[in-house]
Length: 297
Length: 247
Ligand SMILES: Nc1ncnc2c1ncn2[C@@H]1O[C@H](COP(=O)(O)OP(=O)(O)OP(=O)(O)O)[C@@H](O)[C@H]1O
Ligand SMILES: [Mg+2]
Image 1 (cartoon, chains in turn green, yellow):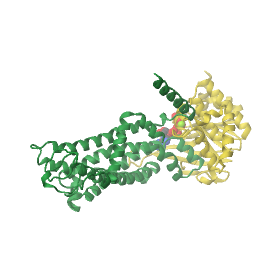
Image 2 (cartoon, chains in turn brown, purple):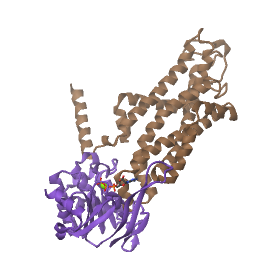
Image 3 (tube, chains in turn orange, yellow):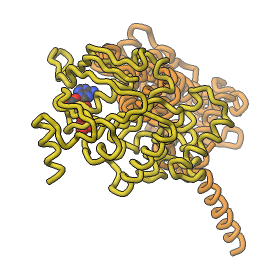
Image 4 (cartoon, chains in turn yellow, purple):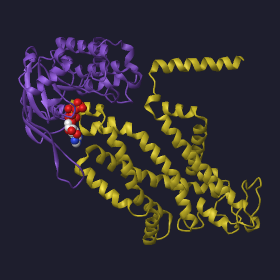
């Protein structure tokens, strides 16, 4: 809750958070939000400009662009988030174990990561798609396979640094069990780092998925996906460039929002920002006094 | 109470495949009696902190045994509430996300104390180290070095352990605060009858509080003397160390 308040104070972060929240909700409840069926073809309305019925106009098959954008949230954002969560999960478990216990476990996990990371990412994703076939699931699987090692590596480094801290040594000396130490001292302290790196790679994963869909390797027609919508618009890029605008801008806005949020998360999660309750109460009193002052003036 | 027998410790040197090891401690044996304050003095890099970590059971010795009341310190259960520690770096001694109260609650909870009882105990401990109860809600970055170190000391004595290892606990504090903390340690010792292992490179501080000092050099015990006999140490190295302070 405190974190939420801190983010809320930062205007840009608050806007970003709202955009992301709206996107996620719209994606989950797409049938409720979308004014039309995203796959409904209506040839009379081909390239129709925006109207009250079709707010963002219609594409080359007369489908409602707004509805397609809303349905496209599912693969473009939500499924990417699932893939991200799985790869961060795997990376975090391995990273915590390797960084905390060190020794042979660490050496083994890190060598495996080194091997995984020495493959060129894009080429490997293409190879996985080549083996498993075209489709959204396969790209997501390829993402998980290729990304966990990177997360494991970064999380391990950050865990290592916290595991050296004297409060961890103190707990060990007291006789607290390793699992308890990890859960109580390492996870909460390393969580900000994990949140920041995963949110920053969330943006790039959305872009990558859109990129692969643009190339026609991702989700298949007639399903809607932002990258694929761009691809469809590409065919009429010179005659009707405005069709590109909607999916292009959506991607830019959502990815920027995630990046801004990840930046401000980094600031907001700094423990130095936490103040004792007395001070905080003082501050809220002061700020409410200020507000009242404003109203009077 | 604490008996150390022929302890050796070495660390791997260099990379993954180099088998070379650097010997940090060799052939360390000594005893520390209940309620005794033993000083460990040595130059930087002589292996004092390493010895401290071994005594706390955080790391295992390569050879030899460290027994606490007859049980190995490796055993978590043997340590539970009996051994505690204060470290040099007060900035990282308290979890940055914990308030003073939460930090002090940890060892008490581990002992199975109920919350209300622990609250009262924390107030008492804070009073004993000269901090008022308003400090309970503060975060570590809101404390000065001396205050943080006092909190660490309060936390260390909270379980009424039989032995506390103080690794350069006062070295990063300034002169007047050092004396205050030393006084505090002395008075706490009288209240709780705690034994201290006082690791330092400051002979003056050690002679102020310790009953015995152990002079350590390159990972070996150079000499072990009672504090009253500190002036007539035998070994050349110890004499040289003392001379440097007197002049
Ligand atoms: N985890 C470790 N891995 C490898 N070498 C270590 C490790 N810990 C300590 N050493 C080495 O052991 C030696 C003794 O270190 P130690 O920290 O015990 O010295 P110290 O006496 O506490 O010194 P200081 O007074 O500076 O704190 C040093 O040479 C150091 O390089
Ligand atoms: Mg040291």
